[in-house]
Length: 512
Image (cartoon, rainbow, N blue to C red; front, top):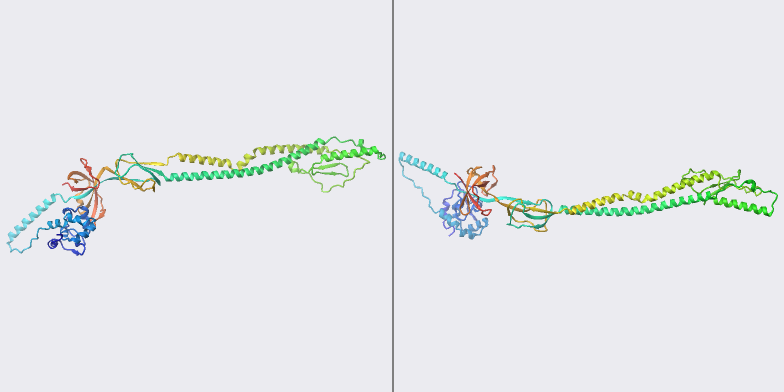
């Protein structure tokens, strides 16, 4: 029966324990001379450490457990209570505590020499036992078989396209593991596409604006060219109709004779002179008659600036025109020699201006396009389009390969998932690079020295050797009971270790 004889077992416990209503006899602080609980069949290192954390340090404490104690400790150990019962923890602890305590009786006084002899024999026996126990192998330490692990991380923000392995697969160096798609490259392509679309819109807008500008400037140029051509035609008509002056004497008639034939002749001559003068006057022109000389002069409606000549002064006062005396008819030529020279110079300037305007009309479209920057924008669009094509040709897929031989651990993502930069995608366990990690209490760290060899007992009782390669200078962890531990690494020495599963328990013992 569980916990049937608690009193004899409790008598073996050192002082300092207390009786807890749930866990029974427990210690609040670590006592000296704690037992190795793993001597009870069924209690491994993990259970022993957990029991130490709960205040169980001695076998007699387990021997005092009752049924509710078993249930309470099973919950803390995360095992079913039936396992404790089936493995007979309590019964085995009681068997270890079955030897009764020897009652101390007072012996009768002995002579001094006999007492001294007894003490001397006891000291010799004690020294022999200490020497014998020191040469025996100490309680073995329990380690865990481990191996080097390589974590495969995401190089950049990516999307998982394909996974070529699964957990437990054996891989070799350069074996394809995953296929990723770089999200950053896709973002760059989208940004470049937006840039190309923006340049296309700007080019269309600039071309439309340049077409409007070209139409407006072409219309103005054609209007100016038309005006200059009209002025040139007028000058040519004036030069064509100019002729030598008629002698005055040939036109004079006796004033006293006013026969019908003379009056008819004078009227025809007057009409001829008026027609010649009107032909020499351009549209909008004004004819002034000088009262002193009786000659006429013309002022063209063309501006001096438009024909490239200096402006002619306009008379501030117009002399009063006098009527033509029929008695002394006098016909003045339509264009005087000075007027004829000025007309010729004006015609040459107008012709040069026509040539210049026609030349400007031929280059006007190109000038408008250059002013609008169309060619520059077109070149930028071509460069952006070429860069976009290059970016599309570059492969966005990244193949992740194995760095060496090993076994694939759990693949943490599925196809289609977005992977942030630096995230661990999977782990590779390098089973060819194995070692044993043993957490040694600091009170026993002197048993393992760097470079020293140790005995390793693998599952199945196979014996191998190892060498201590890493011994930290500081404690790395604490037990629940407050005992400090250091992690010691042991690498293979001699023949190859057996292929047992990673995580198996290995017993470690120092070589004397």
